[in-house]
Image 1 (cartoon, rainbow, N blue to C red):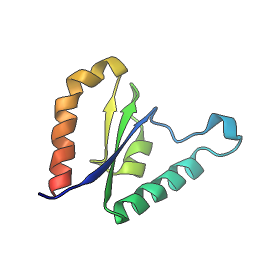
Image 2: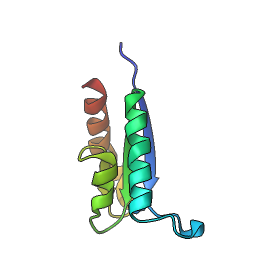
Image 3: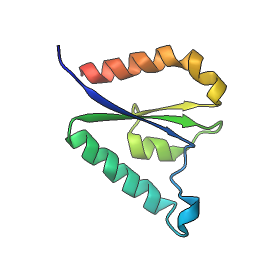
Image 4: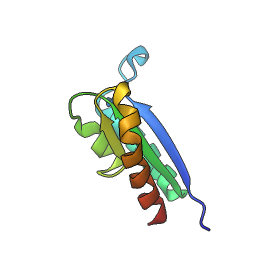
Length: 94
């Protein structure tokens, strides 16, 4: 049986660090995207739960089209878990 390391994140859907001053926007997105790419090179499968009602292109830019799930509210997470589990296990087997 093949073992896979999966790293999950919970995020608001924005790459910003409010207490850091100017570190936000494109810098936050690109630094995070690079860290995710480096994790993938080490065989780690990052996946993000984006808790946000509206769509945000940042999650797709950082995690790729299948590397995240946008969830409108934390209360929706239990209903979405089976779908997310299928997505994660399908990715891990690829």
